[in-house]
Image (cartoon, rainbow, N blue to C red; front, side):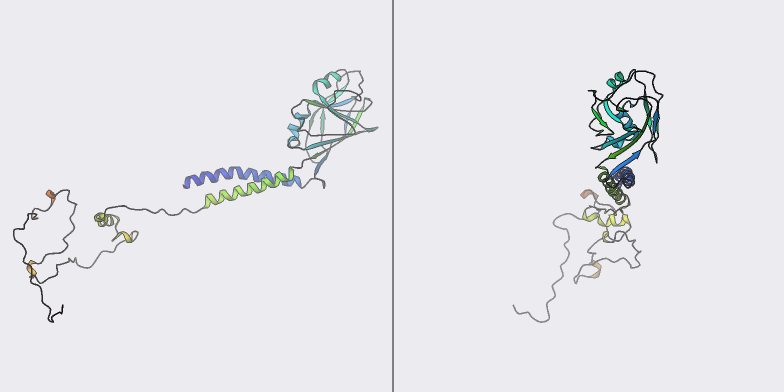
Length: 313
């Protein structure tokens, strides 16, 4: 039973400690949320001579840099402005965006690193091309907006979509001011659930591992005539004194004698010595034992003693 408690306690610690640490991390992150519950971030100014900035696979970028945005019903809001005013933002299937911008010079986002302060954006060199493209009026956009684009990444997680940011009129030489805001209503609840669950598991593990072991009780089932033998083997005077060492007796051995007026020379002990071993059959008894019937010489029965005062019937 002790082994089972130890294994159970170790398993609870294995689950409880990571849950407790994850809950503490989420709780610390939740303290940096805005008063309305959102998490806002600003990107470094993106500058490129191309006509558009493209994120080839939005879901892959979120999976690598911000996986929390893909969980539950979290919503992501992007705001983009140029020196001339609000920029165009649109989500469309990757293959259609690739064909549409095949001859249009555009820069591809290679990485967006999460860090303190403004988030750095790494761009690949702009592609060569001379064609122009106007985003307004295209029918392949899944989501589109001027200045602001908001969507739930979980709803579009199973689709390969590209994000395109450019001027509404399609002119080149971009200088984009980008901001992002993430709203996850489940964030505080999950943080407190992990904290409470992790603490509970750790407490249960400590109780199982540090619980004192109760002493075991040993029960002996023996025949009545074997009780003295068992007590002698255990080194006690009686089984009621089990656990206590018996002191050697200093009193002389005494035997019970029969009560009566028979002569002392014919008196016999009422209880003889305990044999060294238990007889298996009648043949193992002492040779001088007389088991014949009727007995050869019956012992004389002493006469009863009459009371000094007669008793009335």
